[in-house]
Amino acid sequence: MRLILNVGLGILLAGSVAMPHAFAADQKVTLMLGGKHCDSYLSEVETALMNTPGVKKVDVKSMPGHAVVETEAGKAKPEELEGAVNKVKGSGWNCTAKVMK
Image (tube, rainbow, N blue to C red; front, top):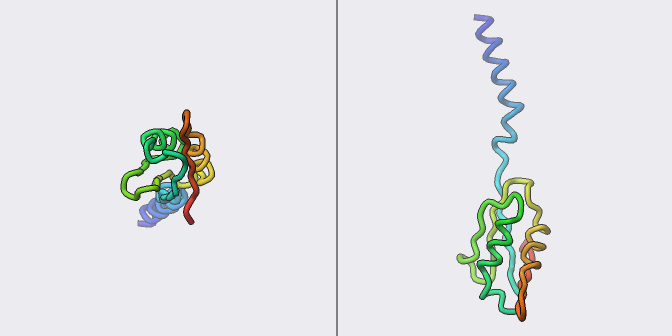
């Protein structure tokens, strides 16, 4: 009986050390979009955000003028998301982003 309790306690303790990483919550960041004709180039914005390490999902359709970005916890900083959008530009058009707080 004592052996079973010791083994069970060991498994419980080992699991509690590893579990915080397993339950780290994803983050949602909302960006307000702007820029000359940016609303015509939302697929480019979506692509730029999806190419940012740690980004899991991008929604540019639910809220006009905004991008809702789902990231792995601690993997993509909001400033990196802004920077990715701010690089989206072409001849006569550009996109800008500002993190909504």
